[in-house]
Structure formats: structure tokens, C-alpha cells
Length: 390
Image (cartoon, rainbow, N blue to C red; front, side, top):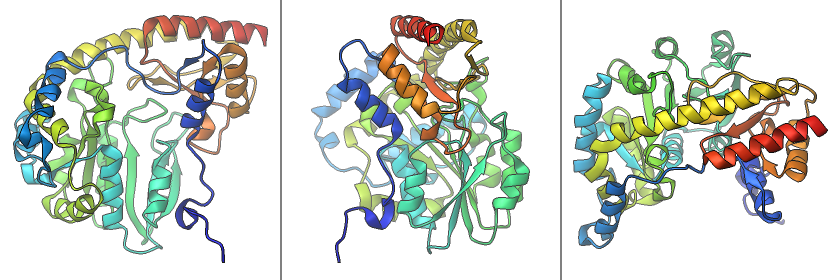
């Protein structure tokens, strides 16, 4: 009997379309502008850069840390985050992870105990999570957002049954840019209170919310009241632009953290030591730095919206209130993948088709505007010219 690698979990899965679009763009001749992924225009804070260099030569940063993460880092999070969000979590309720996805992976591998267990995911959502559910042996249950990309509570309640073990919510959402109010998050928490279900919230974009909302948004505001079944996932990758540092965190009740720690320790032992030490030394500049970057990002949002409105004959969209994505819809075709490939070939602009995130409603595409302003100006001209000449 022949056996193919990966067949037991991801038999029918391919590389993410985001990565495929990036790969195709990189293989083409020079001049392609990719808006498939986030490549910031700003550098990490100079203080953080200095710290990572210093700790690279520091003996203690060359060794493993505690699997749960450096205690001083977790205590600093408690000191800074609790006053910010009105929460009261403790250092033992924090697990420093090797990026956000590792945290969710370790969590699902902990709470999924049998193949009949189900994980509900609001769709569209981050492309990798479906595969993580499959790797954990659980069954993926899609719960579509409504046409305004908001929670459809009727469909959610219909999706929940005795096999449901978790609900995953990316909030603010990737790719739709929408952010669900905490009052609606609390509706979910109240509904699952006695059902032995965890609500897993991925809030890695919570620093990128406009109209001053970002300063007050975090699911931590609900943690004290619902810590028995609320799990918060986040990272510093986006806010500091340190995606290669592979460091994030999970906040959950201490009993769940203790169990997840067993899987986390088996997978990665600990998050990168030098990353932890550098973050620990500079965490107090996070909010100030994020506020500065968020204002620049909002200006880019406004510029892109202004220019895209000139293309209203060909696309429609809603103005983002957070993250660094915009999610337009083609007015003239439902074949988003085919059209994005044609735009790449003809206009030398790489976009991400809706098919990456959800198999239905095939007419949207994702644009990342968290890029250099010169690139934004060029691709907007190219896209407008393509539409006019198509």
C-alpha cells in the first residue's frame, strides 16, 4: 500500500493562495507590485533594534527560557495591560508563544480529544486556520458572516451542538477589515456559558483600528468575567513589525494554560529567548509607537479609499475601520481568482482573490494598503488603467 506524505491530514490542501500569488509575482519580470501581503513602510523602533542586538550577545538570551515565558515579561504585561484595558489577569494566566498560530495550534491540540469534536469558524477568516483545525483532528464547521461581515447569531446558534469544542473569531477580521463590538462578543460568551465551549479570539490587529477606537479595544475587557472559556491570542509581530521574531502570547485561565503548556513545550520548548528579552525591555513603548503608526496607516487608508472611489464603475467596497486591508468586490465578474490572475499578468499588480478565504461568494479580492506610499500610488494608477482598458 502506497503512502503519500501529509495524506493523513491535509490530503487535498495546497499552498495558500496568498503564498501562490506572491510566488507567481516573484517569478515574473521586474516591476510587479505585490499587495498580497503586509510589508510595512516603517522600521521597528530603534530601541527594540538595539535591544535585540544587545541580547544576541547576552548569555542568558542564548539559553532556553521557562516554557511559559520569561516571568518578568509576563509581569510587565500585567502591569501595562491591566490599567489599559481595565482587566485583572495574572502572570500565571499568560503563555508566551512562538507566534500567534502556534498558540492556537497548541490550544486546539489540547482541547480536541476525539475526531467527532467540532470547531466553528466565522467565515471568511484567516486562511491557515482551516488547516490547523484539520491537523488537530477536529471537524471544521463554517459559520458565514452576514453581508455586512457581521456575526449572524441565528446561524451561530444553529451550528452549535454537543460536539462543539471551540469557536474561533479573528477580530478585527482578516480579510474583511471589520471589527465586532465587544457587546456582541459578550452575547456569544453568555450563550456558551454552560456548554463547555471555548471562544478563541485572535486580536492581532487590535492596534490597527481607526477613529481612536484602537486605544480601547481588546477582548481583555471581558476576560475577568468570562475567563473560564475565553481565550485571547495576540502577538507583537504586526505592531512592532517583527514578524520574523516569532513571538506572541495567549491569555487564558491558569488551569487551561497549564494544560496547553504541555503541548507548547513539546512543540517548541519556548518562544525565542532573545525576542522575549527584547520585548520585555521595550514593552512600555508599545502603545506610543502603535499610536504613531496607526495614524500613518489611517492616512494611507484615506488615500486608497479616495482613489478607489474613482473606479466605482468596476468595483464596490466599504471603508475599513481597522487593520490594513480593504476588501472590494468586482462588479463585472464573479470569478475573482481568474480576474486577479489576469490583473497580475496585464497590470503587474498582485492581489489576493476571495477564494483564498472562502469558497463561496466568488467576486471579492483583498488589497493590503499597509505599504510604501509610492507603491500605493503606482498600483492605483495601474489598476485604474487596467479597468479602463479591459
